[in-house]
Image 1 (cartoon, rainbow, N blue to C red):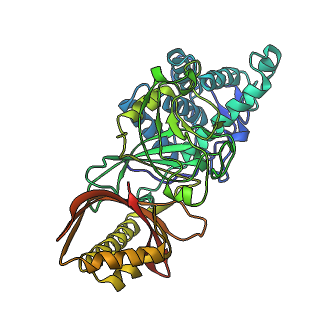
Image 2 (image 1 turned 30 degrees about the vertical axis):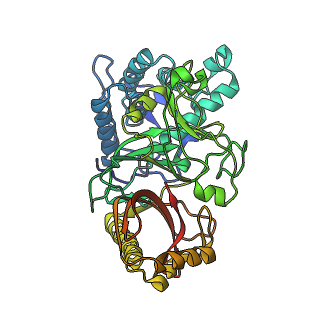
Image 3 (image 1 turned 90 degrees about the vertical axis):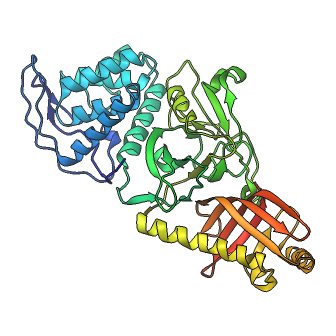
Length: 450
Protein backbone atom coordinates (compact mmCIF):
# COMPACT_ATOMS: atom_id res chain seq x y z
CA UNK A 1 0.00 0.00 0.00
CA UNK A 2 1.53 3.29 -1.04
CA UNK A 3 0.93 6.54 0.78
CA UNK A 4 1.50 10.17 -0.01
CA UNK A 5 2.25 12.74 2.67
CA UNK A 6 -0.76 15.00 2.71
CA UNK A 7 -1.35 18.14 4.72
CA UNK A 8 -4.98 19.14 4.30
CA UNK A 9 -7.25 21.60 6.02
CA UNK A 10 -10.06 20.09 8.02
CA UNK A 11 -11.73 23.49 8.38
CA UNK A 12 -14.69 23.03 6.11
CA UNK A 13 -15.30 26.47 4.61
CA UNK A 14 -18.33 27.67 2.67
CA UNK A 15 -19.82 24.71 0.81
CA UNK A 16 -23.19 24.16 -0.85
CA UNK A 17 -25.35 21.07 -0.34
CA UNK A 18 -28.05 19.82 -2.66
CA UNK A 19 -30.65 21.99 -0.96
CA UNK A 20 -28.66 25.03 -1.97
CA UNK A 21 -28.38 25.99 1.70
CA UNK A 22 -25.18 27.72 2.71
CA UNK A 23 -23.14 25.72 5.22
CA UNK A 24 -20.95 27.68 7.62
CA UNK A 25 -17.47 26.76 8.85
CA UNK A 26 -18.26 23.31 10.21
CA UNK A 27 -16.04 21.88 12.98
CA UNK A 28 -13.41 24.69 12.93
CA UNK A 29 -11.77 23.29 16.06
CA UNK A 30 -10.50 20.35 14.00
CA UNK A 31 -8.21 22.47 11.80
CA UNK A 32 -4.67 21.29 11.14
CA UNK A 33 -1.75 23.68 11.13
CA UNK A 34 -1.44 23.85 7.36
CA UNK A 35 -4.30 24.57 5.00
CA UNK A 36 -4.73 24.23 1.27
CA UNK A 37 -6.97 25.97 -1.20
CA UNK A 38 -10.51 24.64 -1.27
CA UNK A 39 -11.33 22.38 -4.22
CA UNK A 40 -13.20 23.76 -7.20
CA UNK A 41 -16.81 22.70 -6.60
CA UNK A 42 -19.62 22.18 -9.03
CA UNK A 43 -22.75 21.00 -7.24
CA UNK A 44 -26.03 20.18 -8.93
CA UNK A 45 -28.81 21.65 -6.81
CA UNK A 46 -31.34 18.88 -7.29
CA UNK A 47 -32.54 16.55 -4.55
CA UNK A 48 -33.28 13.74 -6.99
CA UNK A 49 -29.70 13.24 -8.15
CA UNK A 50 -26.46 13.05 -6.29
CA UNK A 51 -23.87 15.83 -6.28
CA UNK A 52 -21.25 16.07 -8.97
CA UNK A 53 -18.11 17.63 -7.56
CA UNK A 54 -14.73 18.27 -9.02
CA UNK A 55 -12.40 16.93 -6.35
CA UNK A 56 -8.80 18.12 -6.11
CA UNK A 57 -5.94 15.63 -6.31
CA UNK A 58 -5.39 15.47 -2.56
CA UNK A 59 -9.02 14.73 -1.85
CA UNK A 60 -9.03 12.10 -4.61
CA UNK A 61 -6.10 10.34 -2.94
CA UNK A 62 -7.87 10.38 0.42
CA UNK A 63 -11.18 9.24 -1.01
CA UNK A 64 -9.48 6.48 -2.99
CA UNK A 65 -7.72 5.21 0.11
CA UNK A 66 -10.93 5.24 2.14
CA UNK A 67 -12.76 3.35 -0.58
CA UNK A 68 -9.89 0.86 -0.63
CA UNK A 69 -10.22 0.33 3.11
CA UNK A 70 -13.95 -0.27 2.74
CA UNK A 71 -13.46 -2.70 -0.12
CA UNK A 72 -11.08 -4.74 2.04
CA UNK A 73 -13.30 -4.50 5.11
CA UNK A 74 -16.90 -3.32 4.78
CA UNK A 75 -17.04 -3.09 8.60
CA UNK A 76 -14.30 -0.45 8.72
CA UNK A 77 -16.49 2.06 10.52
CA UNK A 78 -13.77 4.68 10.89
CA UNK A 79 -13.31 4.68 7.12
CA UNK A 80 -17.06 5.25 6.69
CA UNK A 81 -16.96 8.14 9.16
CA UNK A 82 -13.99 9.79 7.47
CA UNK A 83 -15.48 9.22 4.03
CA UNK A 84 -18.63 11.03 5.13
CA UNK A 85 -16.56 13.97 6.38
CA UNK A 86 -14.55 14.09 3.17
CA UNK A 87 -17.68 13.95 1.01
CA UNK A 88 -19.06 16.88 2.97
CA UNK A 89 -15.81 18.81 2.55
CA UNK A 90 -15.95 18.56 -1.24
CA UNK A 91 -19.61 19.54 -1.40
CA UNK A 92 -21.42 16.21 -1.43
CA UNK A 93 -23.73 16.86 1.50
CA UNK A 94 -26.41 14.35 0.46
CA UNK A 95 -23.78 11.67 -0.18
CA UNK A 96 -22.19 12.45 3.20
CA UNK A 97 -25.54 12.16 5.00
CA UNK A 98 -26.26 8.86 3.23
CA UNK A 99 -22.85 7.49 4.27
CA UNK A 100 -23.40 8.49 7.91
CA UNK A 101 -26.96 7.15 8.00
CA UNK A 102 -25.79 3.75 6.87
CA UNK A 103 -22.90 3.88 9.33
CA UNK A 104 -25.09 4.70 12.36
CA UNK A 105 -27.51 1.93 11.45
CA UNK A 106 -24.67 -0.60 11.33
CA UNK A 107 -22.75 0.77 14.33
CA UNK A 108 -25.42 2.09 16.72
CA UNK A 109 -22.92 2.46 19.60
CA UNK A 110 -20.63 4.75 17.58
CA UNK A 111 -21.58 7.97 19.37
CA UNK A 112 -19.28 10.19 17.30
CA UNK A 113 -20.95 9.00 14.09
CA UNK A 114 -24.37 9.94 15.48
CA UNK A 115 -23.11 13.39 16.46
CA UNK A 116 -21.61 14.02 13.01
CA UNK A 117 -24.78 12.80 11.29
CA UNK A 118 -26.86 15.19 13.37
CA UNK A 119 -24.59 18.07 12.38
CA UNK A 120 -24.79 17.14 8.70
CA UNK A 121 -28.58 17.03 8.82
CA UNK A 122 -28.68 20.44 10.49
CA UNK A 123 -26.15 21.77 7.98
CA UNK A 124 -28.86 21.59 5.32
CA UNK A 125 -30.56 24.43 7.16
CA UNK A 126 -27.49 26.48 8.07
CA UNK A 127 -27.75 25.67 11.79
CA UNK A 128 -24.26 24.34 12.60
CA UNK A 129 -21.15 26.32 13.50
CA UNK A 130 -18.97 23.59 14.98
CA UNK A 131 -19.07 19.91 15.81
CA UNK A 132 -21.75 19.31 18.44
CA UNK A 133 -22.45 23.02 18.80
CA UNK A 134 -25.94 23.91 17.65
CA UNK A 135 -29.10 25.40 19.09
CA UNK A 136 -31.20 22.24 18.83
CA UNK A 137 -28.61 20.13 20.63
CA UNK A 138 -28.21 22.74 23.31
CA UNK A 139 -31.96 22.77 23.97
CA UNK A 140 -32.46 19.02 23.84
CA UNK A 141 -29.19 18.35 25.74
CA UNK A 142 -29.22 14.57 25.11
CA UNK A 143 -25.54 14.52 25.96
CA UNK A 144 -23.75 16.24 28.80
CA UNK A 145 -21.37 19.03 27.75
CA UNK A 146 -18.43 16.96 28.97
CA UNK A 147 -19.52 14.10 26.70
CA UNK A 148 -19.58 16.47 23.71
CA UNK A 149 -16.03 17.59 24.50
CA UNK A 150 -14.90 13.96 24.66
CA UNK A 151 -16.44 13.26 21.26
CA UNK A 152 -14.85 16.41 19.85
CA UNK A 153 -11.45 15.25 21.05
CA UNK A 154 -12.03 11.84 19.47
CA UNK A 155 -13.01 13.46 16.17
CA UNK A 156 -9.90 15.64 16.25
CA UNK A 157 -7.62 12.69 16.97
CA UNK A 158 -9.15 10.51 14.26
CA UNK A 159 -8.96 13.21 11.60
CA UNK A 160 -5.50 14.51 12.38
CA UNK A 161 -4.13 11.00 12.79
CA UNK A 162 -5.58 9.81 9.52
CA UNK A 163 -4.57 12.89 7.56
CA UNK A 164 -0.96 12.60 8.71
CA UNK A 165 -0.17 10.07 6.02
CA UNK A 166 3.35 8.95 5.26
CA UNK A 167 5.25 9.49 2.05
CA UNK A 168 5.46 6.55 -0.33
CA UNK A 169 9.27 6.53 -0.03
CA UNK A 170 9.35 6.55 3.76
CA UNK A 171 9.46 3.69 6.26
CA UNK A 172 9.50 3.70 10.07
CA UNK A 173 13.01 3.88 11.48
CA UNK A 174 11.86 1.51 14.22
CA UNK A 175 11.68 -1.54 11.94
CA UNK A 176 15.22 -1.97 10.66
CA UNK A 177 15.00 -5.74 10.23
CA UNK A 178 12.37 -8.39 10.87
CA UNK A 179 13.40 -12.03 10.93
CA UNK A 180 11.87 -14.49 8.49
CA UNK A 181 9.84 -15.86 11.40
CA UNK A 182 8.45 -12.46 12.41
CA UNK A 183 5.62 -11.82 10.00
CA UNK A 184 4.16 -8.61 11.47
CA UNK A 185 5.11 -5.71 13.72
CA UNK A 186 3.02 -3.03 15.46
CA UNK A 187 4.01 0.64 15.66
CA UNK A 188 2.26 3.08 18.02
CA UNK A 189 2.47 6.82 17.32
CA UNK A 190 1.25 8.51 20.49
CA UNK A 191 1.21 12.00 18.94
CA UNK A 192 -1.25 10.78 16.29
CA UNK A 193 -3.26 8.31 18.42
CA UNK A 194 -2.49 5.79 15.71
CA UNK A 195 -1.42 2.16 15.58
CA UNK A 196 0.24 0.92 12.37
CA UNK A 197 0.45 -2.74 11.37
CA UNK A 198 3.46 -3.60 9.19
CA UNK A 199 4.07 -6.81 7.29
CA UNK A 200 7.54 -8.27 6.80
CA UNK A 201 8.49 -7.98 3.12
CA UNK A 202 11.56 -10.20 3.36
CA UNK A 203 15.35 -9.69 3.65
CA UNK A 204 16.59 -6.36 2.31
CA UNK A 205 13.10 -4.97 1.69
CA UNK A 206 11.30 -2.35 3.81
CA UNK A 207 8.24 -3.61 5.68
CA UNK A 208 4.82 -2.85 4.18
CA UNK A 209 2.08 -0.91 5.92
CA UNK A 210 -1.15 -2.89 5.74
CA UNK A 211 -3.44 -1.44 8.43
CA UNK A 212 -3.72 1.59 10.70
CA UNK A 213 -6.14 2.29 13.52
CA UNK A 214 -7.25 5.02 15.92
CA UNK A 215 -6.17 4.15 19.46
CA UNK A 216 -6.79 5.37 23.00
CA UNK A 217 -3.79 6.08 25.24
CA UNK A 218 -3.06 6.94 28.87
CA UNK A 219 -4.83 9.92 30.41
CA UNK A 220 -1.56 11.77 30.96
CA UNK A 221 0.88 12.69 28.18
CA UNK A 222 4.54 11.57 28.25
CA UNK A 223 6.64 8.50 28.93
CA UNK A 224 5.57 6.21 31.75
CA UNK A 225 7.92 6.49 34.71
CA UNK A 226 6.09 5.11 37.71
CA UNK A 227 3.17 2.97 38.76
CA UNK A 228 -0.13 4.82 38.65
CA UNK A 229 1.10 7.81 36.61
CA UNK A 230 -1.55 7.04 33.92
CA UNK A 231 1.01 7.34 31.10
CA UNK A 232 1.68 5.04 28.15
CA UNK A 233 5.35 3.98 28.02
CA UNK A 234 7.81 4.59 25.18
CA UNK A 235 9.98 1.67 24.16
CA UNK A 236 10.41 -1.58 22.28
CA UNK A 237 8.15 -4.26 23.69
CA UNK A 238 6.96 -7.75 22.81
CA UNK A 239 3.57 -9.41 23.23
CA UNK A 240 3.85 -11.92 26.06
CA UNK A 241 0.41 -13.58 26.17
CA UNK A 242 -3.22 -13.42 25.10
CA UNK A 243 -6.09 -13.00 27.56
CA UNK A 244 -9.56 -13.87 26.15
CA UNK A 245 -12.55 -11.74 27.06
CA UNK A 246 -14.18 -14.42 29.21
CA UNK A 247 -11.22 -14.18 31.62
CA UNK A 248 -11.34 -10.37 31.85
CA UNK A 249 -13.60 -7.68 33.35
CA UNK A 250 -15.91 -5.97 30.82
CA UNK A 251 -13.57 -2.94 30.66
CA UNK A 252 -11.16 -4.87 28.43
CA UNK A 253 -13.71 -5.76 25.76
CA UNK A 254 -12.78 -8.50 23.30
CA UNK A 255 -9.48 -9.46 24.91
CA UNK A 256 -5.98 -8.27 25.72
CA UNK A 257 -2.36 -8.70 24.66
CA UNK A 258 -0.02 -7.88 27.57
CA UNK A 259 3.45 -6.59 26.65
CA UNK A 260 6.72 -6.87 28.59
CA UNK A 261 6.69 -3.48 30.29
CA UNK A 262 8.90 -2.82 32.17
CA UNK A 263 11.50 -4.19 29.77
CA UNK A 264 15.22 -4.57 30.53
CA UNK A 265 15.97 -0.94 29.76
CA UNK A 266 12.96 0.32 31.72
CA UNK A 267 14.16 -1.56 34.80
CA UNK A 268 17.64 -0.11 34.32
CA UNK A 269 16.04 3.34 34.44
CA UNK A 270 14.12 2.28 37.58
CA UNK A 271 10.73 2.68 35.94
CA UNK A 272 7.92 1.03 37.85
CA UNK A 273 4.42 -0.23 37.17
CA UNK A 274 3.08 -3.10 35.12
CA UNK A 275 -0.01 -4.26 33.25
CA UNK A 276 0.53 -2.39 29.99
CA UNK A 277 -1.75 -4.13 27.51
CA UNK A 278 -3.24 -3.77 24.07
CA UNK A 279 -6.92 -4.44 24.60
CA UNK A 280 -10.47 -3.82 23.44
CA UNK A 281 -13.19 -1.45 24.64
CA UNK A 282 -15.96 -2.01 27.16
CA UNK A 283 -18.70 -3.72 25.16
CA UNK A 284 -21.26 -1.11 26.21
CA UNK A 285 -19.27 1.40 24.13
CA UNK A 286 -17.92 1.58 20.60
CA UNK A 287 -14.86 3.73 21.26
CA UNK A 288 -13.34 6.08 23.83
CA UNK A 289 -11.67 9.53 23.83
CA UNK A 290 -8.00 9.68 22.78
CA UNK A 291 -6.59 10.05 26.32
CA UNK A 292 -8.76 7.81 28.48
CA UNK A 293 -6.84 4.71 29.62
CA UNK A 294 -4.60 4.07 32.62
CA UNK A 295 -1.62 3.61 30.29
CA UNK A 296 -2.78 0.81 28.00
CA UNK A 297 -3.27 1.01 24.23
CA UNK A 298 -6.99 0.56 23.53
CA UNK A 299 -8.75 -0.28 20.26
CA UNK A 300 -12.38 -0.83 19.37
CA UNK A 301 -13.42 -4.45 19.82
CA UNK A 302 -13.76 -5.02 16.08
CA UNK A 303 -10.29 -3.64 15.45
CA UNK A 304 -8.77 -5.58 18.35
CA UNK A 305 -10.20 -8.76 16.83
CA UNK A 306 -8.76 -7.74 13.47
CA UNK A 307 -5.22 -7.19 14.74
CA UNK A 308 -5.34 -10.50 16.61
CA UNK A 309 -4.61 -12.27 13.33
CA UNK A 310 -1.32 -10.36 13.09
CA UNK A 311 -0.06 -10.98 16.63
CA UNK A 312 2.09 -13.95 17.63
CA UNK A 313 2.66 -14.30 21.35
CA UNK A 314 6.33 -14.13 22.30
CA UNK A 315 7.42 -12.76 18.94
CA UNK A 316 5.42 -9.78 17.70
CA UNK A 317 7.15 -6.47 18.54
CA UNK A 318 5.20 -3.42 19.67
CA UNK A 319 7.23 -0.21 19.31
CA UNK A 320 5.66 2.72 21.18
CA UNK A 321 6.98 6.26 20.73
CA UNK A 322 5.86 9.84 21.19
CA UNK A 323 6.20 10.36 17.45
CA UNK A 324 7.22 7.90 14.74
CA UNK A 325 10.43 8.73 12.91
CA UNK A 326 10.23 8.16 9.15
CA UNK A 327 13.24 7.58 6.89
CA UNK A 328 13.71 6.93 3.19
CA UNK A 329 14.09 3.40 1.85
CA UNK A 330 17.73 4.19 1.05
CA UNK A 331 18.46 5.35 4.60
CA UNK A 332 16.57 2.36 5.97
CA UNK A 333 18.77 -0.02 3.98
CA UNK A 334 21.98 1.81 4.94
CA UNK A 335 21.12 1.67 8.63
CA UNK A 336 20.11 -1.97 8.35
CA UNK A 337 23.45 -2.86 6.77
CA UNK A 338 25.32 -0.85 9.42
CA UNK A 339 23.70 -2.71 12.30
CA UNK A 340 24.03 -6.12 10.67
CA UNK A 341 27.71 -5.38 10.07
CA UNK A 342 28.21 -4.50 13.74
CA UNK A 343 26.53 -7.75 14.79
CA UNK A 344 28.75 -9.71 12.43
CA UNK A 345 31.90 -8.03 13.78
CA UNK A 346 30.82 -8.92 17.32
CA UNK A 347 30.18 -12.53 16.26
CA UNK A 348 33.58 -12.86 14.59
CA UNK A 349 35.60 -11.38 17.45
CA UNK A 350 33.80 -13.69 19.84
CA UNK A 351 34.32 -16.76 17.63
CA UNK A 352 38.03 -15.95 17.24
CA UNK A 353 38.39 -15.32 20.99
CA UNK A 354 39.92 -11.91 20.18
CA UNK A 355 39.36 -10.65 23.70
CA UNK A 356 40.56 -7.09 23.11
CA UNK A 357 38.43 -6.46 20.01
CA UNK A 358 35.52 -8.32 21.57
CA UNK A 359 35.46 -6.24 24.76
CA UNK A 360 35.94 -3.05 22.74
CA UNK A 361 32.43 -3.64 21.42
CA UNK A 362 30.90 -3.28 24.89
CA UNK A 363 29.79 0.09 26.18
CA UNK A 364 31.38 1.45 29.37
CA UNK A 365 27.81 1.46 30.73
CA UNK A 366 27.23 -2.21 29.85
CA UNK A 367 25.13 -4.31 32.18
CA UNK A 368 23.53 -7.74 32.22
CA UNK A 369 21.73 -9.74 34.87
CA UNK A 370 24.89 -10.37 36.90
CA UNK A 371 27.67 -8.22 35.40
CA UNK A 372 28.90 -4.74 34.63
CA UNK A 373 31.59 -3.95 32.04
CA UNK A 374 34.52 -4.74 34.34
CA UNK A 375 33.21 -8.02 35.76
CA UNK A 376 32.00 -9.09 32.29
CA UNK A 377 35.53 -8.65 30.94
CA UNK A 378 37.03 -10.70 33.75
CA UNK A 379 34.46 -13.43 33.26
CA UNK A 380 35.03 -13.61 29.48
CA UNK A 381 38.81 -13.78 29.87
CA UNK A 382 38.38 -16.86 32.07
CA UNK A 383 35.98 -18.45 29.58
CA UNK A 384 38.20 -17.73 26.55
CA UNK A 385 41.22 -19.26 28.27
CA UNK A 386 39.50 -22.66 28.32
CA UNK A 387 38.54 -22.71 24.62
CA UNK A 388 40.38 -24.53 21.88
CA UNK A 389 37.71 -23.60 19.35
CA UNK A 390 34.36 -21.77 19.14
CA UNK A 391 31.78 -21.84 16.38
CA UNK A 392 29.03 -19.22 16.63
CA UNK A 393 26.16 -18.56 14.26
CA UNK A 394 23.24 -16.14 14.50
CA UNK A 395 19.83 -16.72 12.96
CA UNK A 396 16.28 -15.35 13.18
CA UNK A 397 17.63 -11.79 13.53
CA UNK A 398 15.30 -8.85 14.16
CA UNK A 399 16.56 -5.31 14.75
CA UNK A 400 14.28 -2.62 16.16
CA UNK A 401 15.24 1.02 16.70
CA UNK A 402 14.44 2.26 20.18
CA UNK A 403 12.62 5.57 20.67
CA UNK A 404 15.08 8.31 21.65
CA UNK A 405 16.55 7.36 25.03
CA UNK A 406 17.38 9.66 27.94
CA UNK A 407 20.90 10.29 26.60
CA UNK A 408 19.66 11.04 23.11
CA UNK A 409 21.96 8.35 21.68
CA UNK A 410 20.74 6.04 18.88
CA UNK A 411 19.85 2.64 20.31
CA UNK A 412 18.54 -0.61 18.85
CA UNK A 413 17.22 -3.87 20.23
CA UNK A 414 18.47 -7.00 18.43
CA UNK A 415 16.73 -10.35 18.94
CA UNK A 416 18.21 -13.53 17.49
CA UNK A 417 18.91 -17.22 18.05
CA UNK A 418 22.52 -17.86 19.03
CA UNK A 419 23.96 -21.22 17.93
CA UNK A 420 27.07 -21.95 20.01
CA UNK A 421 29.56 -24.83 19.66
CA UNK A 422 32.92 -25.20 21.42
CA UNK A 423 35.27 -27.85 22.74
CA UNK A 424 33.46 -27.97 26.09
CA UNK A 425 29.97 -26.47 25.57
CA UNK A 426 27.23 -26.51 22.95
CA UNK A 427 23.72 -25.08 22.83
CA UNK A 428 21.25 -22.66 21.31
CA UNK A 429 19.94 -19.57 23.06
CA UNK A 430 17.32 -16.91 22.25
CA UNK A 431 19.30 -13.78 22.96
CA UNK A 432 18.58 -10.04 23.16
CA UNK A 433 21.10 -7.22 22.82
CA UNK A 434 20.60 -3.51 23.39
CA UNK A 435 23.15 -1.67 21.26
CA UNK A 436 23.94 2.04 21.52
CA UNK A 437 25.89 4.21 19.07
CA UNK A 438 28.75 5.89 20.91
CA UNK A 439 31.27 8.08 19.10
CA UNK A 440 30.27 6.59 15.76
CA UNK A 441 30.49 2.92 16.81
CA UNK A 442 27.76 0.50 17.81
CA UNK A 443 28.47 -0.89 21.26
CA UNK A 444 26.58 -3.42 23.37
CA UNK A 445 24.73 -1.86 26.29
CA UNK A 446 22.89 -4.98 27.48
CA UNK A 447 23.11 -8.72 26.78
CA UNK A 448 20.76 -11.39 28.03
CA UNK A 449 18.13 -13.99 27.26
CA UNK A 450 14.92 -13.03 25.51
